[in-house]
Length: 117
Image (tube, rainbow, N blue to C red; front, top):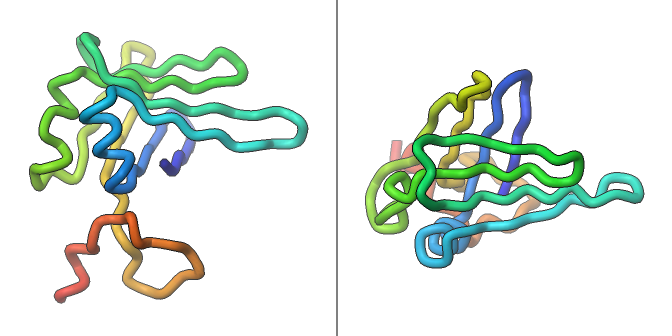
């Protein structure tokens, strides 16, 4: 799972395996070692009225309504977005392969829809 934070927005991009995990198991977790601390970021789905996020100093937890992720692994939706009650813009998307070669393993990413053009 990739995370991007810019201003008052938060964006997550999920691989095929991660989309399957959120749909079938209800959560996806990843970590980054920064200095001598570990930042954990997690996407969970449940009975939440809207997208929202919490931060406790060590972890970012993004909460998604269950209805947003239902069948996401089998439908053609790229993602979903919204604002939480504090005005944070949250965007959650499927991660696509790049159009130009990069030295990254993209085997678990979605085929780029612009590749045929």
